[in-house]
Image 1: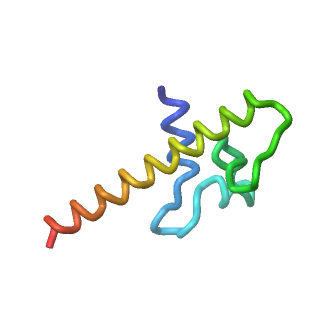
Image 2: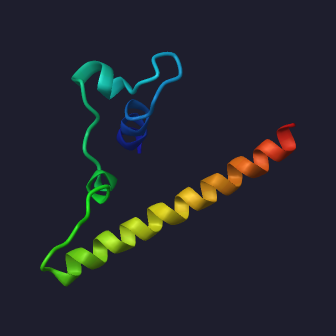
Length: 78
């Protein structure tokens, strides 16, 4: 959807400014679900802990795949 694409663009670091449009306009980047994962999360709710663990695992899996993609593309670029 267009709002999600716009949000992603505005939250991405731009090469010309070396900062995100959100940072330029508001002085901070918006909070996202992954923002809360940078701090240790501990809740009394097993459901909340499971959700955070699933999100954290997904983010780690995506990072691993992205790193593999970068390495693959770098290998064939040179």
